[in-house]
Length: 248
Image 1: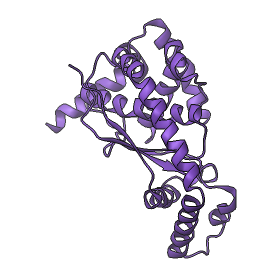
Image 2: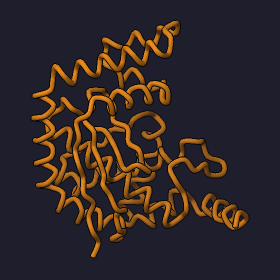
Image 3: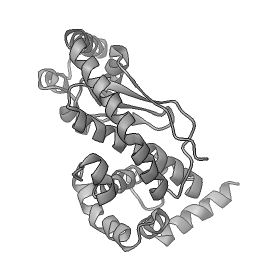
Image 4: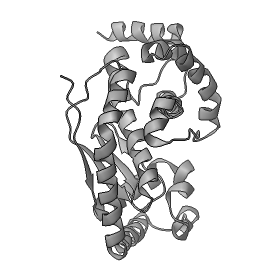
């Protein structure tokens, strides 16, 4: 029996402020999307000491969680209820997509976030969901992030390729880009749209450029192995597999 993961939704201001501080340091190209407008000055104020930046973000996050406590709790409860309604159908679909590949043991945890983007951490099985969005928007984030968890576990088990793996001749973020575009393909697929009513919107020009080819392979044969082998290309995977043998 393929046991399905337990997903918990947690409201914790400290986790979200740490999320913001980590994101600020890690992904400067997305920071304007991540931060609310009232904090955009933090991006351009390069004279602000690091500790003061941390203090500003922490105060802002704590104040928001306190001021919007009731709203965040209500939204989270609605999201939890909706997830419990749709997750049986969702897991049937992911079994179909990933050849009944077993989910890793949990728990999987979603954290409420007051910010504008929702990073996830594969090894820790954690992600962030929008604290202020309506349930239909927030549930799409949940479905998207859960896809990432099983995609990367499948990829690791089949090819020994992880999120941070750098493939020969590819940019450092190539595997991450593949995972995001794979999600776009699935989010454009009618059985998935039936559950979430999703619309596949690429993050950037890289993903927009990659999407048509990957979409083509999925439409040809709705099989993840066919898609991955076609998209990664046998030459790339061959070089990667040979490099693995050399390390043994």
